[in-house]
Length: 112
Image 1: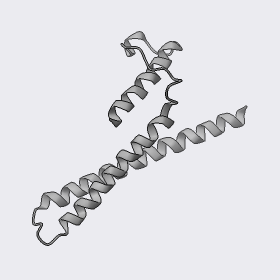
Image 2: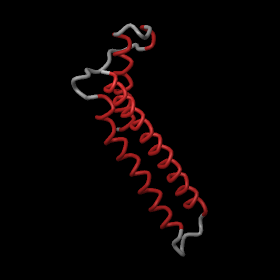
Image 3: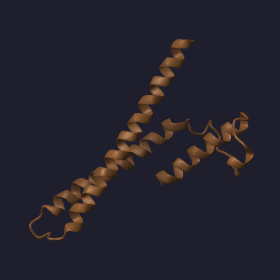
């Protein structure tokens, strides 16, 4: 579901760039979404954060399972580490993108 929403977000961004003449027609082969329906990244962020916290929940649950006395498989612990690394990478990258966009908007507002 989140990947589908990301696809629509990216398609809309490319459509706007094509409409402004900043991209070639070959960069986008289908019509983009209407910007009045969803306001860019702010629409996508709650879904992204839900996905990130789902990864964190999986990591915590798997860590608890791996510490159980009856669990002797090493794969559970490795999978818990994998979900933790996924969460940290995705979450921190998303926070960095949001922070950068907010700083850019503030600097553009100060110029006006």
